[in-house]
Image 1: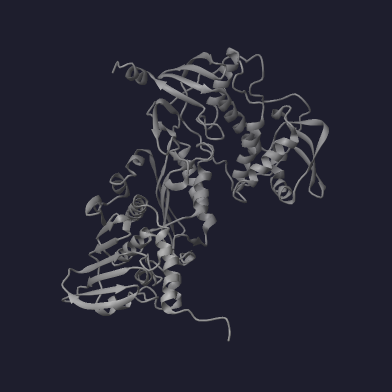
Image 2: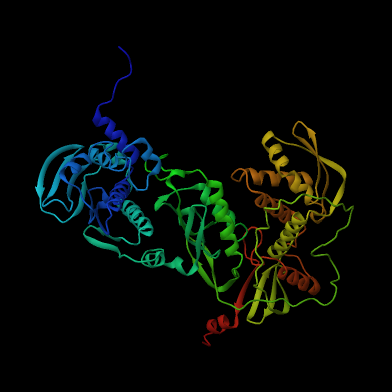
Length: 593
């Protein structure tokens, strides 16, 4: 006798339940999506003990007749697919045809439903996937699905459920997230017979946000609205002042389906590069609407992950639009205005202020070369062909700093300066890094840079992967002032380095750069490669450090140079270059107002 056997139906259903039904919130998600597909305008959800003992979803949708009510509990029964072609043109939220049967296989189900053509409704009770009773019963048009004793016949799965509080929170998050994509639908959640939240219908997403726990985001949100080539991108993304230490505040929807998409998240992260601190993540709610034939929503049992045909195009549109808007904003934080979001973290909140403007320096600065336009050593020029379709990503900001008088240093690390509004405190190292970063970007854009020859060339032995990355970025490194020769067998010789790097070891600098790329997420567009080069070099350059004394002329020159940058508010790593305190802030702090 052979070793292969066909599994009984009840085991097959339990396996399917394990794929689709992970926890009570999975049940809520599937039932609410069924209600939405039934064109409901009101959905009420009731739970007890974190959904472990009871989940009840009631809607006023189209409902079902007796025949459909019986079929909906069977595996692979669905009204969404008639032939194989329909799989690739799905517009509904649910379609696999196994959710309700999978739920029924591991719980006790009471289904009560009626459509408008029936005088009486149909009530079905099932246990462990087996129908126990079917009878007529009066009920309004719509469907009520009651799930009790979840995982009663799969104790191993039940044992691994989280606490009641955690399961309640997961269910609430599912409903809130779903409600954002369906503002025309009213949602109510009851926990242990107590109303937890009530989201009435509303015409706009912002109104729905105001009624949820996302309401504190609203004052930071910027609109996203792109329509081109059969693609619609809409929603909101937050100003750089609002960020989180994880990706939980990034909500993506494709054709109103909430999804997880790392490519879209990486695109959003690229757009904020240099504006938020490292290991922080932007806040955004983004809706994509596109032809369902270019979306594969069936790569994951819960349809939580998707695959897009034109993913690269979509990501580039997000990066370009979000960057353009962000770099027109004033990102300077106020000392007294901070916004806390996330455990133990403070995030800067924008305070309204007038545009800034630096005072021009009238005489040539003497002393140390804070911001070298030329440098000592052997200077050579390198040309790099510019790709015409790639423009410098940042946008000129009209925000200026109206510095009246530089007042001096604080602990030889911060610069205090009076402005028309009050005063600012500049982080001298972060400010100088921003200045050098943009200088490097400019040299990359123009294709010219100063370099200094090394007395003894540095030889670097790389791994195959490191060598591939170096080859990919070689033109950019040469354009910024390196002279690098491939000696074969993944070995390279460095004969010259950028002048602004000073005495930094060429080998250490290139290895830091390559390892930083390796920690990233694969191949990136040209402009992002330029940023990576500029960021690494700026970090390793002769930037003024903390605890370094500066002369009044150097302070004034640094302030003036910062003003001339295209984005003066943060260093290349996203830390603020300065904070401000207005006269109004002072008066409030000293209780004069």
